[in-house]
Length: 271
Image (cartoon, rainbow, N blue to C red; front, side):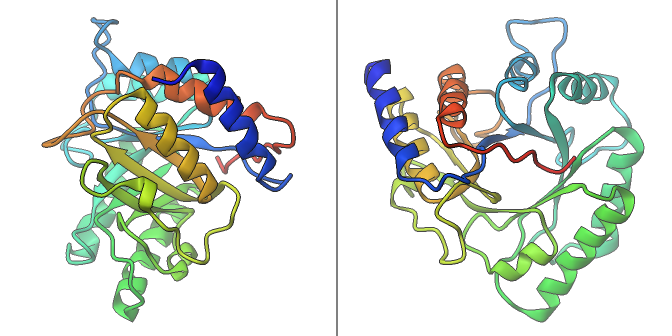
């Protein structure tokens, strides 16, 4: 593991390479774990809430691979507590690469908004090509969310490179989601349309990182590539999003340092 002062120097050098108008980078966390309020040592939501005042943070709410059949008070409390701390929460909805019936997808969007005070929707398993039918499908998804809540955060997750045309339907595209041990984010090349500075329209997720040193290296590379939302974890399959990583606090602190570097300009995301 590198000493802390070396990490600080690396982030300072990275800042010098970025434009003065660079935006703040934040955490997009797949929070696929139950808010266990009766066990503070095991409740990952407490850690999200503690981090929210320090770094831009969006948690992806996922009660039952979607909203489930009923409102769950523990999740409602998690959303409200995260809001109080300055964070945001968006609801998970899968689309099966535009093969899932659209009305079923929109019904889950409605269920989320009827049960929880959400800030937007995370559409999983999305396409990234330019097929007219696909673009129309996700345009309908984005329009429906914004009719429910103007200014909502809409994230599409192709998990790989996607055409910029999808930004007509979304606030952000998740362009990398993979096992770091098999498909390294260090080797990822952003599409040509991604700006050189961290941009809130671009997100990446990576799991199965070896340790804190690996996290620091990947984080630096992602920020250099223009990523504005990121989450890295040492968790593994079958569900790499069911807990927070051992290096969670180090990841938060690294982004706090980056966002506070001279020359950074804060751009508050939509609420």
